Figure (tube, rainbow, N blue to C red):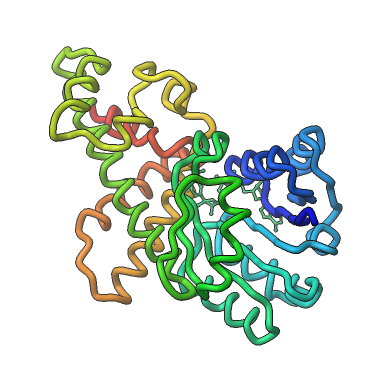
Amino acid sequence: MTQHIAFIGLGNMGGPMAKNLIKKEFKVTVYDLNAKAVADLKSAGANTADNAKSAIQDADVIISMLPNGAIVKSLYTGSNGLINHVKKDVLIIDSSTIAADDARAVAKACEQKGIAMIDAPVSGGTAAAEAGTLTFICGGEAAHFENAKSVLSAMGRHIFHAGASGAGQVAKICNNMLLAIHMIGTAEALNMGAQQGLDPKVMSEIMKASSGNNWSLQVYNPYPNVMPNVPSSNDYQGGFMVDLMSKDLGLSQELAAKSKSATPLGALATQLYQIHQGTGAGGKDFSSILQLLQKNN
Ligand code: NAD
């Protein structure tokens, strides 16, 4: 029987993820606070709902892709939260990037009601969300992870089980701290080369074939017009917002303090993104950190 999926949160990531589920012929019902995002999914073939509670009626699987932990907690475990209205045997998959403790709190509340839940944050950005090639990094019971795999495979290429509840979020935050660090480093190197009169396209080719090669250079170049179809070549619109990267870096520093881990570069990256956010860049893609450096040129 076709699985019925409720998808909540249809932003830069959730929208294309839900579309891939429709393409793979799942029955999908969507909800977002933003009516435009809901209308876009309706034209892609989704059923729509006026609120989250209606969206999850009869759902076998609920997927959420929301901005932060406060919203995720309120959706599932707030007063009249969704866990009071789900169908028996439902599987909840939260793909938002949130604090591991928030993920564990929601999973615990689910467990107390006999509801299966995993945290399944993603990596890969909007291009991978559109192409259905995301990496899913999951935390939770092995049996729940196994049950989630067929749905996750419709949206992703690599699906990892990082460990118990919250482990997916820990791994994701470690990854995003590294992403911020190499994006800033890449932007610094390209800006310095360009200031010396070098062509950023040529610089990029050289570094891609050299020891400075990294993901930001390969698929997400921060210098405008080096690569087509990346946010830097589109005035830093779309992609992964500075506000969200700042949130993730904040989570990395909470995790560092809790686990007594030294993350000096992570701390500096957190400050640089906060400064960038303070200049009004919160809604731009995170590769726009180059523009903060260029203010100093
Ligand atoms: P976004 O801001 O584009 O989308 C979030 C969506 O959630 C919006 O459409 C918003 O209207 C909706 N929303 C907010 N509160 C809601 C509520 N209570 N009920 C229903 N809908 C609600 O963000 P995004 O870029 O799609 O990111 C979503 C999550 O994925 C974040 O946790 C982010 O950190 C993570 N993430 C993003 C990327 C990326 O490249 N954009 C990559 C990996 C992970």
